[in-house]
Length: 188
Image 1 (cartoon, rainbow, N blue to C red):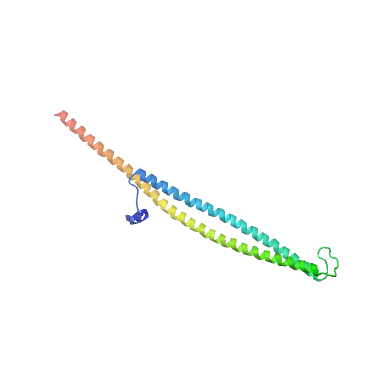
Image 2: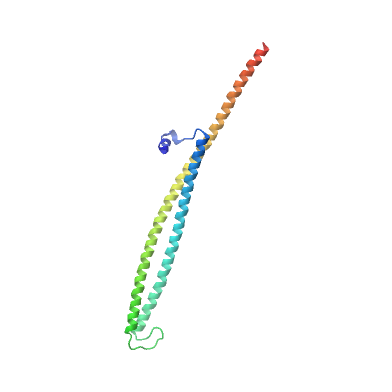
């Protein structure tokens, strides 16, 4: 409702008519700023954590791909009837082939799961970046409003000062007129 009233004002300029209202407006503005900054901090921390998580997942995936390549080399060695560990000639390589194929299947499954996790984390990073940008936009709007409010506060203080000077001037004129009448009566 307050925003609607402020939008209806001429030139969008409004200022409190007394100092207590001004103080409440300043406190409200301060609370808005603190809320925006707190949200920015939380979003930044989540972004950092998610980027770290994504880095760790990608490192694990790279390590797993090295293991898969080594397993492929072992599979070729076994197919040539050579033991991949001691390089001796083996006649029955069926058990080693089965173990190698089982390992390969496990590694590929794990690599697939890590890739899914990486995609999930990247999607979360994108969402957090978008949220962070929205918060930055909100902060910009707040700062623009704050610049206008600072102008309004300055206007209020000027207005208050002028009103005090005016009131003092009226009192001085009134006192001067009373003193003038008293001086005129004393001269009679």
